[in-house]
Image 1: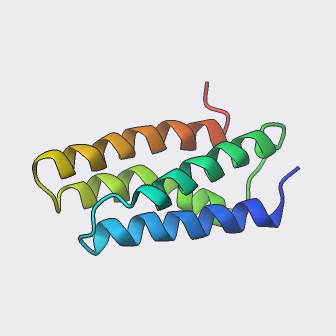
Image 2: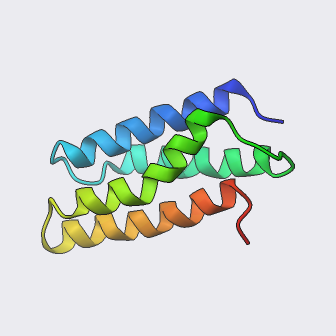
Length: 100
């Protein structure tokens, strides 16, 4: 069963992570850890559902593309770190919609 808290947590964590990248602050490790945790939680909660909330779908669709685009703002190790995050978040987003 999905809870409003898990969806709100995902939205809050995604906003913090995305804004840090867009604002030139790099990968915010606290926001990144929170986002990964909320994605894992949502994947568990949504496993048996046939549909997920619209806000969740919007976030999941944006995770890879936005993170990849933001990675282009950086060079070297910072860009690599952002791309590694993009791929890990992509995998976690896939788990939220039961891609196997």
